Amino acid sequence: QLRTLRPTPAYQQSILARLLSTLAVLEQREGKLNMSSLAAVSAGQKLGASVTGFVAGSGVKAVADEAAKVKGKEKVIYVENGAYDKGLPENFAPLLVENIKKNGFTHILAGHSAFGKNLMPRVAAMLDTQQISDITDIESEDTFVRPIYAGNAILTVKSSDATKVITVRGTAFASDEPTDNEAEVVEGVDPKSDSPTEWISEDLAKSDRPELATAAKVVSGGRGLKSKEEFDRLMPPLADALGAAIGASRAAVDSGFADNSLQVGQTGKNVAPQLYLCAGISGAIQHLAGMKDSKVIACINKDGDAPIFQIADVGLVGDLFDKVPELTEKLNKA
Ligand code: FAD
Image 1 (spheres, rainbow, N blue to C red):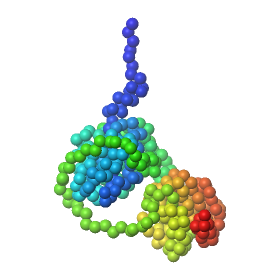
Image 2 (cartoon, rainbow, N blue to C red):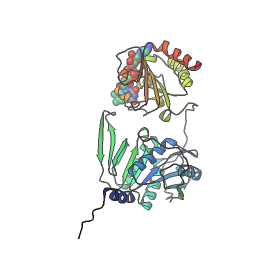
Image 3 (cartoon, helix red, strand yellow):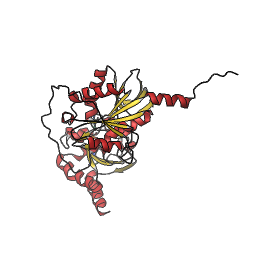
């Protein structure tokens, strides 16, 4: 008796997984792996494909060895060359494309960070594909989810390109710390292309506080703080009492209360800490777009009708000039 042998969905899925291969572009700074860039690995795992990490710069073999310990990766490719230290896209894109072509990766993932946003459009252009930005979920190997209009609408995008070039929202894909995985570490190809761009210098603000984009706790101040003097008087002690990073609304940044790098929201940073505690922030949609995925949202505002209370898990109606010092004092005593 003849029977049609149809592959089961599980079998089809396993064949598909073997055909897909993901390259997760990792970030490093001065020989240290940027842990938030590991979200690209988690997104790759969700695709169900084999995941290869990629890192380049001077002395990056040690970074590659560390990255190899993160579960979910089969291989880490590294390229030792100081020309890639600062992640200049003019240098990095030809390097990446060369390694993509050599290995035939189907999906190229990088974090939606300054580095990823700078690099990936260039990589996509060189591969003649459409780049897909800031994805928050993966439905299948060709269908991705991304927020648009400051997170007010969610778009599902289907790509017919052979190679998908994607940036990943770090807060949407939890990244694993290096543990006991043992991925193979191999040297990649270095095209050593001539670049018209050269790194001259950088001027970085130094802070002992956790980095805003990846901090587990964030305290954020808004226009309600009234002045830079009040912002500096009230917010840093509260942040120190909690071991938190400091953020700010755009109104606070535009009014000169806080540095531009602290802005949270649609045109600032996206954060999703365990705790987001804000004072003197009304909760405009452009601000919510950058922090609404926080686990616990707490707010202090003197106007009980402020929209921030609609999204907050814990809200305190009161004058921040009384409540913030009181809270700081209580936290320091606890
Ligand atoms: P306000 O809206 O003025 O709110 C101040 C709050 O403080 C009020 O609710 C008030 O009740 C409270 N308050 C005042 N005094 C006290 C007190 N003594 N005690 C307690 N509470 C007090 N905004 C962002 O934050 N991030 C962005 O990335 C961003 N991108 C934008 C992009 C575009 C294209 C546009 C058009 C706007 C964008 N905005 C962004 C601006 C946004 O629309 C709001 O204007 C801004 O978020 C308001 O900041 P705020 O809440 O600090 O100020």
